[in-house]
Length: 332
Image 1 (cartoon, rainbow, N blue to C red):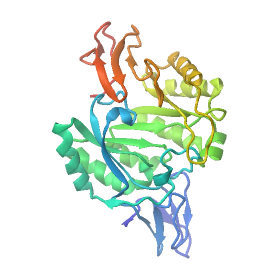
Image 2: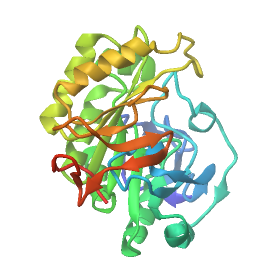
Image 3: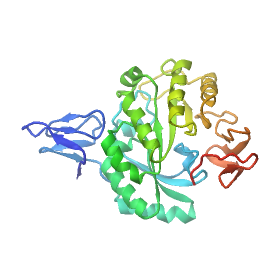
Image 4: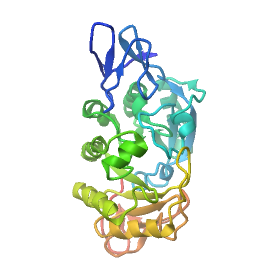
């Protein structure tokens, strides 16, 4: 265990309040917060998962999904158990809500492993993913700091439910984030995810000023799929920057939510709405012609063609479209 960075004592009975995320859990001695990873031990709050990981793999960057951050590269990905949301549709619920077995690794070990793969597999760094990295805050911060010192990139795949102060401490070491904006109604967040919308929007806004950001929106039939809600999401995101990529992802039944999969027509509708205001729009979890390809926003030609998570064609010259010269917003 390692003492948590963000918490405060709240009374004389050794209770504490966690200040890491908007839940601000009130935790009495011997108890844990909602995420099940932060425990009060005699009036001090500890992370019980420091260095504990459930899985580790060398993934394509496109799998995160990050399409505009070192496209075609790989990233050493690892995750832990626990989450500060309770999404009824969670695809990784065995680790986010369960007690999956873990193994231990130190920041120096994962950094050394990423360096090992840097030359032999075009690994650009480390991704904190699979479950929610916010609840792994102390380990992620220590590892990300060390990785940056070694010239590696850090990627965060997150639900965005984190308070501004800890996010501000972490951001100098994070190079890219894929942030889930699960819907654009607070009621949806409260009923389906056990969270709230506003902190997520704030996270996107803060992160977009400091690092590369892409947004994912899982479209669930009857819950967050109305044209009006999608248009509001797009309007908000385009206000931060029309170059921010958005990934509309197809829902499939999972965990506690048993609804029909998202119709392809709904994904196409979302794509049409988004392309009116955003330069880069993608359709995920579906085989849709062009859905994973990067198009030049000026001439409409394909500048990166993808087959699954692999790049099949690339038509860029010094970061610009080779057909018309438009600058394509890609980090590499």
